[in-house]
Length: 324
Image (tube, one colour):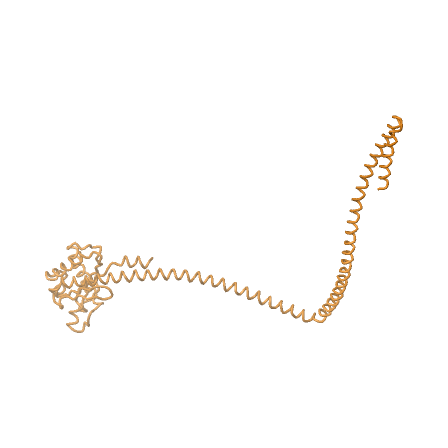
């Protein structure tokens, strides 16, 4: 600041002198005055910069002081942490030593545990294999059970179908028996009988109704009975017909075979003459080998001399259901 005042005083002095000096000297003085002024401005600028620098120095000194204080605090904390770390390392070394000692003293127990675990693992593996085998066996049995259930359901349906069919056939047989009884109601029980046995209807015609002794020609009264029966059979085309001839024990076996067959054939001819389909009819002779009664009495022998017309429902549907 003193330098600046000096420069100003010099400028004033030069101005005062200028009025008393020649022009050339005045100009020289003016030039120097301008130089001094410029230097003064430059110095002022330097002074201002110096002022700012001093402010920054103070600010930096304050920050440095604060940083030094923080460093001292951090150093104290570092020393504390370092001490704690040393303590931890010491305790860790102690624990390692204790652990090594424990491992050394329990090596036998560890081996025993290892052996025990190995044995348990073997047992567990065996158990898993057994469980897998049981599971596979269970799956196989479930498949068999499912297959059996399906078959059982099929069999149950089959049984139901058979039961329904048998019930239907039984109903038809009952109705057929009723119609036969109605058609033959004019004949006495000694001439013919109508019975049901084993799911079949037996129309038993005595020899007295059909044939004379030793004859195979049907009497008119017997033919009338067969014609009435044929009407019923034509109304029931799903009935199979079997005609069996029977004899008593008198005469030779060969004669009785021939007589029984020929009488059955005579009845068949009357039936087919009434338009009964011959494909439905089977003729056979049983001779004396299927008696109804004992041949030791005349009454028994009379019962044995007979022709039976056996009626049964067709079994095609029944066989079809069974073979499904």
